[in-house]
Length: 131
Image 1: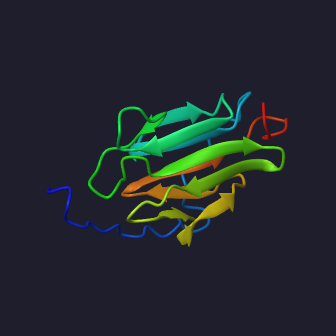
Image 2: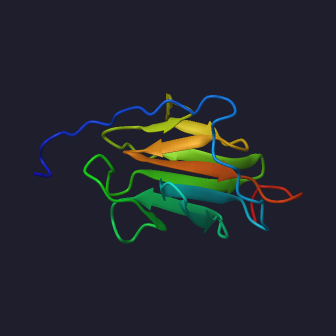
């Protein structure tokens, strides 16, 4: 696909109650969990204050696809919790099916970047804020 051509993101509705996959166990750090296909998952512990999400290989979380911007979004650990911020992506960043510019994440939030959905898992028994 030509990089100059716009592409579009299909909004994926959050799963109905009782149909969501079993949650990942909370660890020492807040975590984003990506399930690329049934029975497969990849966890991205947020060990540092910030983590970038995008198509470019320099990002902390690299997601492929023409509807994923080179630097799509940033996740920051703040004193109030973990904040997701869209970095001006062409196709937007969605949380639980809603377009967001900035969002304070809560347990189980579904973050959509292009065709990919990541689930937010807070740390076990601790503060999700700045390290």
